[in-house]
Image 1 (cartoon, protein in one colour):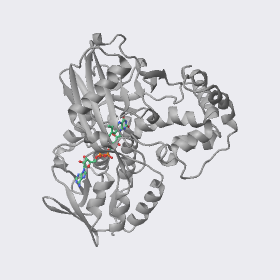
Image 2: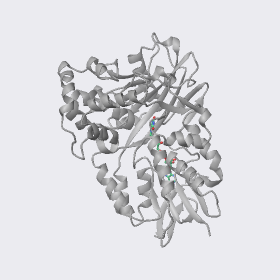
Image 3: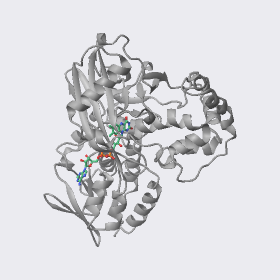
Image 4: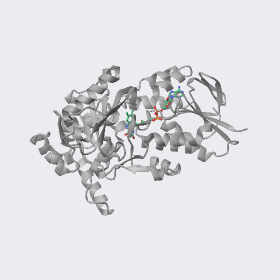
Length: 461
Ligand SMILES: Cc1cc2nc3c(=O)[nH]c(=O)nc-3n(C[C@H](O)[C@H](O)[C@H](O)COP(=O)(O)OP(=O)(O)OC[C@H]3O[C@@H](n4cnc5c(N)ncnc54)[C@H](O)[C@@H]3O)c2cc1C
């Protein structure tokens, strides 16, 4: 008799898992695969919307080519022809302080010229190499920055970076969990400045171009029709195995498998993989293990509103150049940053228009997502008018409100992960996979899904 695998959740984690399991078990007679998704469409956080000539992203704008997993998935799905990369025009990134844009330094020289840093801050930079490595395991991103390069480094660089990636609070985000690469650089090179020089040299030795930034070799990629195309392609291919509009509400372990009750039917499966946010996993698992559910529920999420604004180019004295800007939380703004989307990827807007994506809310402003769409558009427009000096009104807009957008790898997060792992150990046929475990980026999700597909084994509970 064929084995049954049930995947719950049709975001990028669940769909990528389905894809790689389908490759591993092509014969339905051996292993039958089913994915259920509570919404009427797959995608979860990822959704691209074409409106007129503009393409709005309600979730990720893209993924970095520094890790191979998403590129591999795209190739596997035959989408290589649709792959696009951000151009050179999008290389410059800014930090916005007191409504003024400052180019983010990409070299030591740039760091020394960065105006918001004081002379004392700059004098400290060469001594970073002598700061002993290794903070405590619960060290936050902010504490790390302050320890290595001083308070203003944490405030002007790490705080906005955390806003841009996690919509989170650098003073609460666990460094090791949220940015393992930074810990690795400190541990391998003993210093961030030394790491920068060594990585530059390594790239030069490998024949890379001379213009090496702090993050070598990272280019943002997407698909011509947006990130949603990736999920649509998987849906089209595996439609037969996907059940939309069905919510898992209760999960029970039986002797040799798992019973999942949805709002429509009951499934028996030999293996169940829950690819849903932690709060949704908590709800479904509560009857099975209340303690596990309460730990899952302890992972907090940042709320976020994404507002897309389209202007005519002629409405700017100087149309914005570069990738976009981030705003340190010390500026006390509801806006976390603005992406210059039409600079990042061509064909996001017509040639005579500018598409901007304004991120509002995050953990510092949980009240923002309570606001109406009109209020959010107004906040976004005011920000753009103040900083980018627009003098006309928008020609189109888009709003997406995400009350629980991004999981926060906060101070207690490593402990929560240990407890989750321990509590899950007895359930050999039940697994958890989503962005609250092992990284929030699309690359992390596709990598973890591929790894899980390779590891699935059938055994009795
Ligand atoms: C605004 C925003 C911008 C981002 N930008 C980037 C970026 O530029 N680059 C990047 O790499 N990452 C980015 N991310 C992060 C990345 O997009 C997410 O971490 C990733 O898409 C999460 O995928 P997932 O499948 O793990 O979870 P989700 O996308 O949350 O998918 C979970 C799915 O499970 C379904 N579900 C929930 N409960 C049930 C249930 N009981 N039964 C059935 N189905 C259920 C949901 O409806 C959903 O479809 C961004 C995130 C946000 C919010």
